[in-house]
Image (cartoon, rainbow, N blue to C red):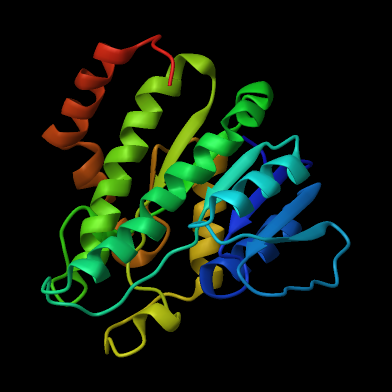
Length: 239
């Protein structure tokens, strides 16, 4: 998958990693970048088309799908992360609504276009999908669920020529990590790593130094082998 001349949709595009992904896509020669945001958004490059897109709104998702039409790469980047201790069910449900069902809803809406283009789905997750970070437990739960969704989609779509990538980021210097006094990567570095991983066809993309430190252990793990083994049960079945 080469980014040049591709049509890309990026949710959560107004800040942090999303904004950096828009800029990186333009640098790599994307033909069109649809920037999905919940607020008014403008960009000086004419290749960028803003979309009002709250990933928890079925109406806005459907309107976006009708407006975009042809699509090569869907980047599910929109997310929420709040501190919690698992005592507030509503907070867990809020994380799932954005971080899990948001990905599911957008993917279902744009899947017909991606099947036609033999495109790619890119889900921006977190290493917290592999090992939970207790101060953001609900976030970790939602990302683990989204990772399982990503793996399942990959199995269902493997024979239909749609690639499905899981981005497993480490700490990134964005609003979400404010308050964590730990080393963080810049959104720009992470965006570069994400598009590098897409172009290389990596199933799991580890786009920053922290996440890269666990990349080889994951790729050679029994769990990764089990994922490939389990995928055989759905080979050729429709999604």
